Length: 468
Image 1 (cartoon, rainbow, N blue to C red):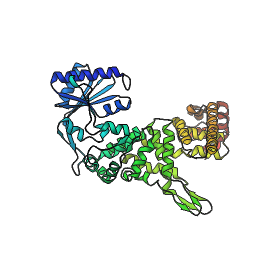
Image 2 (cartoon, rainbow, N blue to C red; image 1 turned 180 degrees about the vertical axis):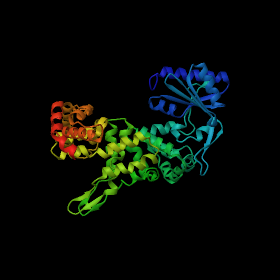
Image 3 (spheres, rainbow, N blue to C red; image 1 turned 135 degrees about the vertical axis):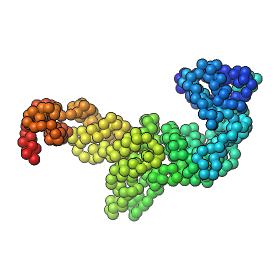
Image 4 (cartoon, rainbow, N blue to C red; image 1 turned 90 degrees about the horizontal axis):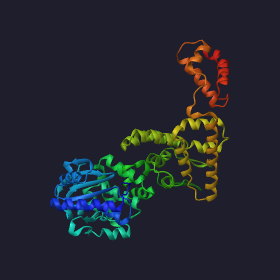
């Protein structure tokens, strides 16, 4: 089944689940995200069910009768899931759930549907669809979730302070849903998020980062990130981003709000790519600016070396966020190089400079250039057009140099064995030194990338190098 599935197939699955529920004499309801997204006409790739009874036991029966696969059970939490083709079905026993004052793990107790719906995060997720034969398709809406979907607002079913205190991760989820759905957060709910934000410190870093990455993956990530800033949440989960916010002015000089600039870059990039690693790199590419910010009389504000400071900061940021080594290495690479194409615009673009960029960026060169284009946030259309044209020129030069030198597979045309034979030397560091000098001469454009030219160059330099 394709993502989102076929509506007729989905309806048939729901009817089959309802039939099995009647057969087993239990009540089962499709709940939360499925009902919400059905109303919003959004694609569906999983369905959550609440079972008034034993969720895992019912799930096992349903999996067997419907020829499902991949059955997984979590007895402690009263949940189980399986798949029908690519559609994930998850079943949970109706329950209440609450965090104790200093615990990172919720206390779960069995309950009924209404209690289960009341403990859910937001009214838009408190909707349930009855699957029993007599009432199939009936929407149960005790907290006016349909109305809030229509108004496009995020609101808690109970008092916000209670909702967020019981499960602080809901604070992150509010920002995430606002970003994913382009909804507004209701005033009291926003105040509750801000008031209970310190409770986030008891939630595991992995769960917070998971929600944070979902915000980054949303269609317009700035919506969720701006909420995190305005509510003060960012100071707890990612203080380095908080430091980007604000504008300072000295004399007639001011520097733009780096946080707002970063959001523009991220939104620009989000229109080009869904790649989370690249989006994260866009978020952190200027992370070092506050630490190198200097005011120079007659010049204004400068941020020299901010890219390398950012690379160093990421060594601590990524592990703290429990991000993978791939996130760390990739974001360091993109952050460290993001000013290089800009510098190529300001100087005479030599083959050597292009070669160095191509070699250093490697397979991520296209991503780097994409970020550079997204980094153009001027409100002046003429300036934007000029900068884009400059990057187009750099891109053309990159293609020319790559085609000329075949840098993707570049290595000295004169190999180690031949170097040892021509120079009459034994294996060792000297062979690598000579080989490296040949490669450097080619990269610098001193000699063409062919065997005879490289051999002639070797014969020219070998005696002096060997003596040295």
